[in-house]
Structures are given as C-alpha cells and as structure tokens.
Image (cartoon, rainbow, N blue to C red; front, side, top):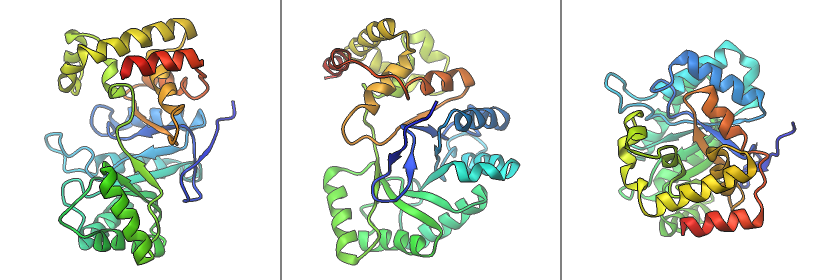
Length: 284
C-alpha cells in the first residue's frame, strides 16, 4: 500500500496523514515495546514521529527526555531508519522560551536523539518572552542547520497571528505548523467507555467528564459508523479528523501493536459524506 504524503506547510517536508506520538515512550511503553511500535509504524509507511523534551518528566524518577532517548536508541540500532522518518520535538513546556533556554534545550534534544531535528516546536506559548527573542532563537537554530522547520503548539489564534507577524517583520523563518487540540471531543479520551475502562489506564481518570453528554453522543455515532465500515473506533475518529480542512496529520500514541494497527487503519479509511455529517453533528 502506498501511503499519501502531505506537505507540511512551507517546510518542504512531506508527512503521512498519521503521526506517531512519542509521549508514551519510556513511560507506559518500555524501550522494547517502543522499538516494536516504531518499527511497525515505519514498516507500514508512517514517517512522522512526534516527541518533546518534557516527555515523561511527570513519572516519578524521570527528568524529561526519556522519550527522545528511546527514539535516539531506536535510530542508533538501525541508522538506515533516519532517512525514512521526520523527527519532531518540542521545547519550553516547563523551562519557558528564553533564547538561552531554547539553545541549550536543542543541544540536549539532539544529543538524546543522536541527530538533528526536522521540526522544532515551541511546546506552548510563553507570554513573558517577546516573540522577537523566542522566534529569533528558533530562527538561528534553523539557519545553523540544527533544525529544518519551526512549529508552534497550543497557541491561541491571536497569539498565533502575532507570532507570524513578528516572523515576517523580523525576517525570521516562518513557523510552518501548528499542533493543537482538534478532534471528536478530544479523540484520545474516546478509548474509555465507562468507569472500569478509566481505571485501567494511568491517564484514564483525567477523562471521566467525557463519559456523559456530548462524549456519549460521539461514542454512539462512532459505534454506528464503525459497524457500517467494519473499522475500529480509533480508525473512524482519526479518519474524521484527517478529512477536515487544514489538517495535515493527526497525532496518536500507541502502547501496543494492537493499538497501532487500529490507528493505521485510518489512513486509507474514506468515510461517506453522510457518515462525516453524523459524526460532526454528534460532536457539535
């Protein structure tokens, strides 16, 4: 199967419609499991791997950078994989976006990954640092060849406009991607159907409020479309997102090959106009 490649803004990078989230690597997926997931993802034609320097600092005993380390070890095991993937990582979630923070964090990320960075994000907005400084630091990294493209994550529309305006005014390389929540009632939370399911996952209890109201309406619509298509619920939810205007790739993490297989099924799943409308109505 030949998987579609979509242009990532003006970066020149081409990515498959499904990106693999690395937030679970070194957390709920150990290194051996992570290697199997990464191998299967690339073997299936996927190419974008998303991580961050903060993953997974929230786990007792971790400091952050564990996910990048797992990915770097995977690349070192088989260097030929490097040319097959687009590596995206992020900076500034906890330490902020001062230029010196960005510069040192980039060096640390490259050391853990064992390679340069294809797409480097501001992990979240830092209003305390002027864009001329935070984007200027990213611009210097790109012009030094350490990163290929620049992205932003979790920015409001107003701050996104301001960032793009600053980049244009200052002559910086323009951010080419925005990573943000956009899915059917926060798609990741739809893996859970009742309290018993929530108790099974380290992340489950964060999502209890989605088991009522709109969340249940979306689940009902997903069940119907899944029955009609024969596709897993995860594939249906991701296919809906992939079909929305302006979406280059959906981002999903997997802690098992079974989860990954369900997600990969979204790539060539085409929903009918009626199915798309039913899902959209349920999530509105």
